[in-house]
Amino acid sequence: MRLLFLTDSLGENSPDADGLVRLVASLNASGAECAVISFLPCRKKRRERIAALGVPVRYMQAFNSRVKFYAPGLTGAVLLFRPDAVVLAAPAAHLHAGPLSRAFRGLRLVSFLPRGNAGALCRLARRRCAASIDAPFPPENAPEETQRAFLDAFVAALVS
Image 1 (cartoon, one colour):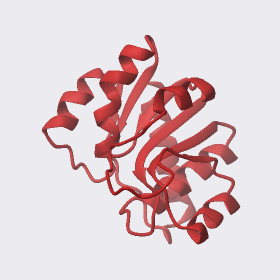
Image 2 (cartoon, one colour):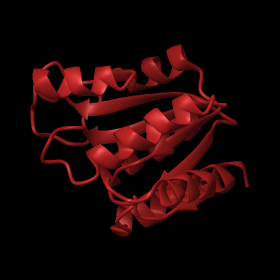
Image 3 (spheres, helix red, strand yellow):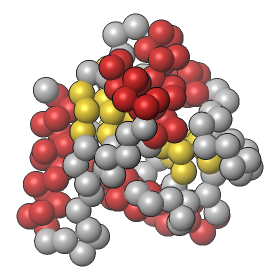
């Protein structure tokens, strides 16, 4: 399974960045082919830590414009990766649900909001999604069984 995760930022100040990176690294380790597209770039030290985990990331902006939803070249990046599903993993990523569903007929969109912070635009975008996942990330120091259970529940929600 090829999964592409869209998020607004992977920086240190982004609330769910660490959980998302751990999730993608776990999915890659379990045999899925995953990548992340981040709209905003993060600092070099943070990029190196993410690369050390083996998580492929593409940044849409060359510098941090602080515009969370701006993703120039997103359609081309999705076309290059050819995913089975695109996981919208941030409220700003949900703004691209319409254009992606029009550009790629038949592409499975999945809404993933670990904090459950769905505003009006997110709720509208979720209508285009095949699945919605609202489970929060387990803490980093959670037992292995808890993290494995979260991963299994995530994969089950993806394929349903």
